[in-house]
Length: 526
Image 1 (cartoon, one colour):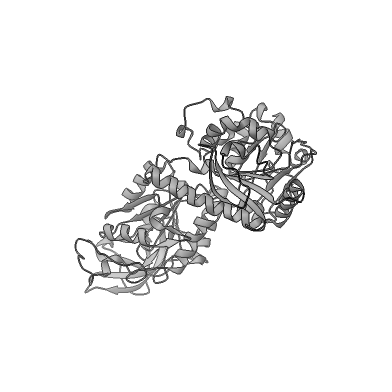
Image 2 (cartoon, helix red, strand yellow):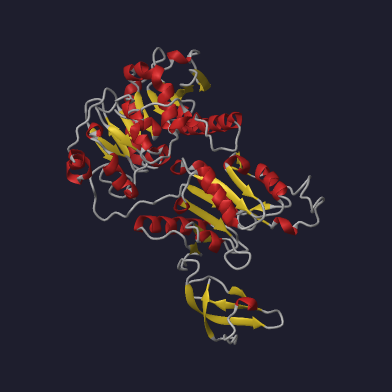
């Protein structure tokens, strides 16, 4: 294809010449692409200062894409909007800090849905949203990510204002797609739900075309190479694919550069290939956590001293007093909340506790980065029983395939195990050993193992133990050594290669011709 000759070929990628009527920055993540990249950050600051020409910087933040209502959410529309506005304010404040703080700039949030102005700081600010892109004449406009179709729908009445503005434009994710010539690239990965707005033929809906005819495909990694080659048409030429840490920069004089994360892979669509780089991470679309002994301690069934134990009725356990959030779990959840690289990932809990009312109460009480866990976990499956039921429900509710999930649980295998039976579904399942619960080391190791398997095309249905222990597919027959046998109790333990810790077995599951002598070798299926 002509497009492949233009974009997939690393050498030819250097020859794409785009023009822009303003300085523009297109990226997947502001945190990774600007805050995490000093070169990009300096370029953006210089562009804004040049546009301000000595005036106090005027900054307009557009979070509209993040305000889209999700049909699969357990939250009411009101709660979803409240959460989205809070997140938007936090992100806007990070940009204000990047620009030098409230003393260095005037800033406001503009919602394209109703032209409302929120969170305004500074002086001489407009009161009518319709004046923000025009009479107020901002020096910087940042259109943030979320649902592309929601953003483009409400951008309809603002197309002329965006086209006429000479502000430095920063498009993040959906904001980059809508700034391109075509917006239907948002359909390719299936991340954004187009049914949140009226049905349209999105292949015929134009973008702002701020980049000289280019279209954008954010959150690109090697796993999407075939997909992009399959879906691109001649009308998308040139196509600029944006990795998580990179930023495509255009200046008003027609110059361009692609600033790459030094640790990023050589994504051919996004810029010239470089030798000696590693593949980028593949991220799960849904991360599921067990509760007891994974996120918090103690296990709720141990709180027999509390009133209404049998019914799990109020008042129930108090967060921080009766139950504590584990440090590694808090660190992982904070990363999920604050790092824009995780934008779009879905989060869930799957617990087989018989104390579900207490568990839900604790989710409301515990907070990370200013958000309750109840707010963070949109999908909650808390009830006794085999966890395959929990995951079948999660797959139906989220639309995420098992291979795109990552699961953390403290019960590995055996009669009360969860990791092994969930791994048989095809879910990458990380075993969280007691007493530490989820640790930062295990969190990173599980993410790395999931990414490695996805990029290598290996099966994801494995149980991942701690660093240094090979992941094992559930159900594999392997050689093991009997470590202990207690005939009076009719159970024992074996040690198996690649499996952390001794593995329990019951005498009723042992073949009649097997001698249960300590130290003897046996064949087991774990």
